[in-house]
Image 1 (cartoon, rainbow, N blue to C red):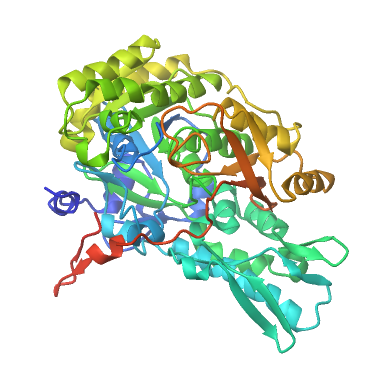
Image 2 (image 1 turned 120 degrees about the vertical axis):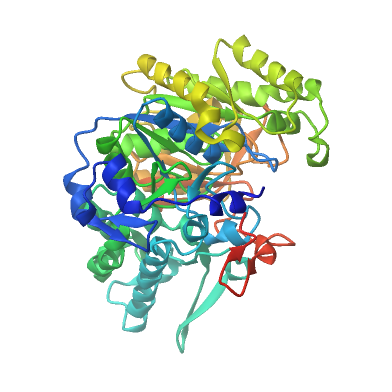
Length: 553
């Protein structure tokens, strides 16, 4: 049975009942969007986000492959499993982007009997948060060009306007555009995808409305002819942007197929942004749950690293346990097996692909945690392949647990849940940081590249080294770095699978995100506006005469 058919066979509970019975959130603070989704009022979220009573569990994974790892499936299955064994738990996830939904990946948010619902709503328009971010971002772009049109009192250099536009779709034709500001003034610009917008990152990292406005006002839109930074507050944009984002700041609540609460809020990309749900939703969940299961994007080298070095550094949050998802299928692909041959047993390929998993385990240990390593079981996995995977895990002294969340829902994750509950007892009092705040920006990039990617060095292309020094001279040297690179490899080359060594990381661009309070280093061929594949997922969508949407997953 397809995921969509499984989800439609479940009679979801009214979201008001989920909120009141599972989270003790009163019904009168819920703004419902139909029967099964709601926003929790911003006033309530602000007043009830502390004290934190819950344990925070981070779910990450080995390097992703086209075979799929089931990280979100594990997150949802673990949440359901904890509730099954009597531990009150909720989950915190990001909102999907329309880009992947209509592009290469298709819709997301779990699979099988470990899903978040209503899936069609979550993957499409949901509660309008991504539209609000898109509108706010493009309003700022419009105000910048309007300022240039009406005399440019701030002396903003048209050739050094850094603020582009965004759209929540994959559209490579919009990567580079030429704008006609007025008759004798044109300038080059382009579009990024909304999930890469700095405003999306600001929304996800802001603690409250005051912090949101401070961060929005700090956004750098360009420089003057004499090199001074021009910010959103300089063109009087702060309050208007905040007004568009006010409702989007309120956390969204939905449910698993087993009727457990899930906060789905905020949606930054994980390879070109920091890839975590909002701080506000995380705090609210921690104040109303004994365990909160959240996830970071893609593999641990991207997702977990940014979760620790950006979200945790800025918010003061820290995980109490880390779950690392692995699969036989992914190990086989890292061991050289093609997608079409994954159904055939190949124990030696599992062993050949093991160095990728081993490196992720080593990286998690570097930040002070002993991961619970979950083998997310697929139907074609053989007992021999599962045993070989567990041998790799146990050989490193790690706890390895097999989960069947896709097939069995929460019941398939009970062993995982028990291991996670035990794991929180050995959580460190504070993470081990792989770089310090007062390290130079280049040293921070090199620390991540060396420690997490095992690169032998970093090459700064174009004038990126000088630009990093300029950021430091302007007072931004203490910010963390957000490395934008391929998710498929520890290197900058998506075809270099396994656990490569001897490679170098090439930084081709660096961008100051003063509002989000991090510096982005764009590496290799990564794009901030993805393109569609030859046959996009959009081609598989269906819409019948009754209004039922099909083909999303």
